[in-house]
Image (cartoon, rainbow, N blue to C red; front, side, top):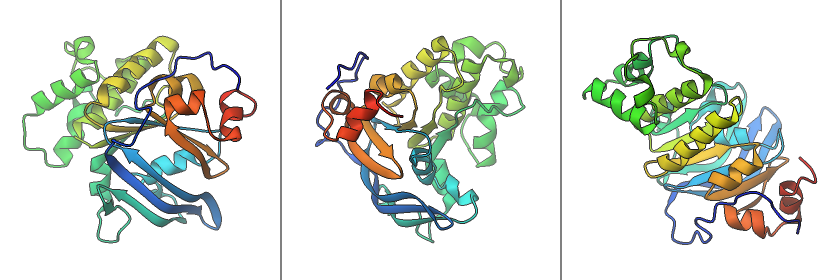
Length: 266
């Protein structure tokens, strides 16, 4: 196999002892008559970073948005199989999708702060959802966890748009954290950022896994290798291989995986 000249995360080379947070069982995902993802079965582990990689259109973002029912907003989208969060099927008719999204937060590719103050970006969601605690403390904790407090503590009432792109993305992560989720979904969270901001976000993600289960979609192979504890390769709507990041990048079982990570296609 061609040598991988990138830093590879060596954590969790064996995942037998990890606790399952999300379990997908025989999942098929459709847009109308088009099957976007076929026969997906995989466990996502608690307090770990799972990277979803693969070429454009392979189904990885569809899978990500399925985990907090964001695809419900797409007409003709449907799910077959089971998506279990702590052994509860989130697509059971008795389950409230709003409750699912409170437990499973999401950060998007492009920073999308609200057109409000930095403070309100953090406080608004909890207020709307009836948070009864100390909002000032919640804002402090969320911004601190996102390594943003020291940079914004003296301008909390200024517009979020006054922040740089990297700061805005950390603000969006803080906003998701403020909702006190159990899982954080990240859809290419550094795609629009410069290398310095990307490095800060990656360091932040590595710190946040202490508190959250994190699933990240990335086109950046080096990023997946650096921060993923586990990596899943998707291709044409199918899960090709899923294992510890170390094994995926140094000794993959599937030739398709080897071809992808060595740049032979993608």
